[in-house]
Image (tube, rainbow over all chains, first blue to last red; front, side, top):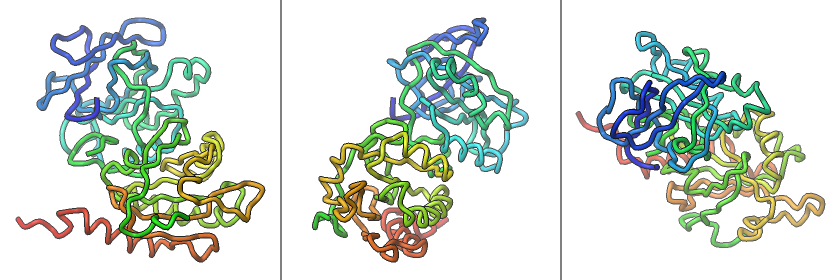
Length: 172
Length: 169
């Protein structure tokens, strides 16, 4: 999926009318619900965030996901130095298969999703510390089933700026 | 170097593995932005290590300027990844380990019979890969300075951004 607005939400149950969804588990194997994606112009669900469409791949494999979602009352500006520096650090990182920041309005950082192969996490538990957005908000460590997330990360860097309010690193 | 790699000619849309092993084309890396393509000898060259700080400084500006940057060498992706991490670079590197692009562009540095590297060369491209400027860095002073690149990217950006002049209210 490479064009048009894309939305992601972590929900307790699989919602109707989604483009794709995958079951989500915690590292202890407890269910964490469903990660769902939509391709619509308007926000499809109150808990949905806009994401880079490049992270969605219906044929994608299972993924280990670092999902940061700040409290909606404590979202920093997207141009806040803490967010910009985290983006710089992600652009320099390796072993990522999908990356997107999440937005809920034109000016604030609402969260981020970093993914890698579960095999990477198994062999390198320190991968979780790669995510610099943990300094910006609380993070969940998740395992997402196949059929939702891409395993080919978009081009990262040197740009850190968004385009017309779209989530980084989305291109035009 | 191929004679047609000159201003206002179209640069080939090379597709090579990046530092993580993912094949990327130049048009994908440009993503609709001006693109600086940097061919370099390799980590072993003191001239490259002396010039990379210029590129790091450029990247600091490019990150807010909607401008893409890519470095290309004949080193394997894992060597490039180590160099990139060691320098703190945050732009993609492409690996021409098989030297196919080097042959296509005729950019083999014949005088280095040990490494067979690229002739250090920098191209400033429009988003559609049309060449704006070329710098032959075989001798160190042939390389572009920050001022050279700033001037070139100003002109390319001015040409491609319809809102270069502040839009009227």
